[in-house]
Image (cartoon, rainbow, N blue to C red; front, side, top):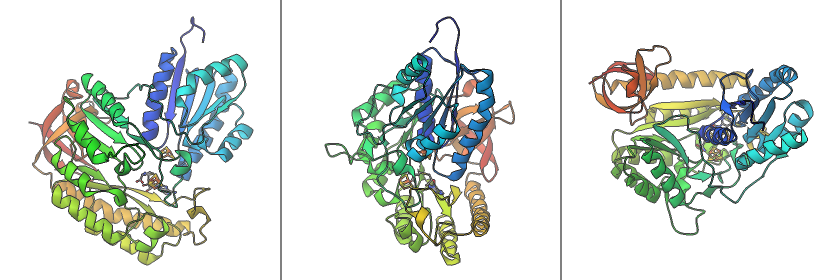
Length: 443
Ligand code: SAH
Ligand code: SF4
Ligand code: F3S
């Protein structure tokens, strides 16, 4: 790139924390090349869309955005437009992009982010559209840094890919087979973060409970947690996502005994009906899931539990849905992500014949929310008048005098305070309860 003119970049990220963290890596690579972040697409010399394919909405948004960029590219022919992320791992989508969105210059995937500087160079030399995808990589690239969004909390990958093939899910087809990072690389990364003052880390993987299975030696997620817990300066350890089928007693014991592991577990249930769980290939029953919740609550009484639920999976009858409502009432979740089932071409469920009509899906979805929200509120009532430890995250978006942060249990807290507290652990007494947030004051 030319040395005389400052170049600017902008990244738009869709999807999960895995993608967010990949965007932090892309940002680091671009800044290493001399690019500087800008908030606006109009000022950008380089725009990256880091895409997600998990539901149709995410996919449609990208096509919409790309259409709108045509004009910008006409005004500024030097603008480079790059696409990456999970959508790009699918050949049929790359073909759509190449035939309909000819203003896209660089396409790369989830396994070759580290090659971006090379791809940019090739594009600048040739002006040709560059497509570079590794379908399923066996290797893990370690020497790539990240330009992290926050200075006090960070994502750390512990594994990539997924081997579970839940029948509705596209992730195993975009992120490839499961591979675990070497424990020493993970631990070194966290030590480096804590030496820079980071207090909280979130360990990322599609199924962290099966961490270690692809290593050449015997190693478990619980063991990894025990090692990370020893790291000086680190205050909080979080992780996601746990698959119920692999949540071991060893892990529950580790969570209960390790002081830095937060009292929060995200344990996606997806459905409360055994028939649907089987059709989803989740490999546990409703009874096994409930037993697990029981065990966890006995070991860690104050733990907050959250989940993911899909409504309208093919073949879901009214009685199956009622079983999901019953389960939700029995578990009493602290929070939940709820989704309308979305057909993903290439998955097994996409070809199931008994798809649920949209109107029924929407009705059930609303009923599910109407059941969940009062439970969230009641769970939050337990915090009334309590003093909680909060990691201060940022100035509230709605009120410049207010700060927001999270408890160890993952609750979002608003309170009055000076922005100098950002990144610190403070004690807050809770005096106002809402469904999704709590309010309080510094003590
Ligand atoms: N690996 C994680 C989740 C990855 S995707 C896990 O197994 O828990 C995040 C959530 O998206 C899933 O838990 C599921 O609830 C939802 N999801 C995945 N595919 C979907 C689809 N086709 N339609 C609707 N929701 C879906
Ligand atoms: Fe998708 Fe299931 Fe893998 Fe999660 S465990 S990423 S839902 S296939
Ligand atoms: Fe994440 Fe979406 Fe890919 S949820 S793994 S970015 S398909």
